[in-house]
Image 1 (cartoon, rainbow, N blue to C red):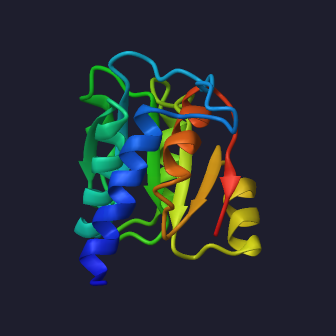
Image 2: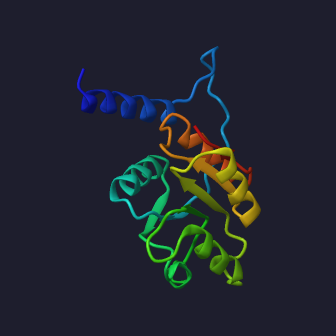
Image 3: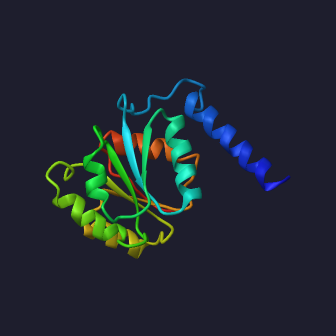
Length: 165
């Protein structure tokens, strides 16, 4: 099987399980709801990673905005009429995720927005550094399309999510 065929199958499974979640007795599972008109700002410099995240968020009915660097992220976020979550890559050009986090936390309007680190540097010491720095959660790359919808639902319902593969 080709890699693209396998990827297409995983995406199809992801969509089906997102739209029709079932438990072992084939009864619908109650999942935390996603706020209507939710908006997530994705701060990610890699286009392929952004597209993957944007598609998964889109399938959940979540509007997605994109910034490629931590530089001027506060100014950009201030222009958004609504913001429910920021998914922040750690390794970014010009200003890393830690620097951007500090600026966002210093903004009165944005200080209470949950900010989740999303990084390929997924290791216990990186997770500890993210927690100590003030992130509200941690998702390791590569993101798992099977787990991502539930992770986002939990984060948007106020549950901290600290997970890496």
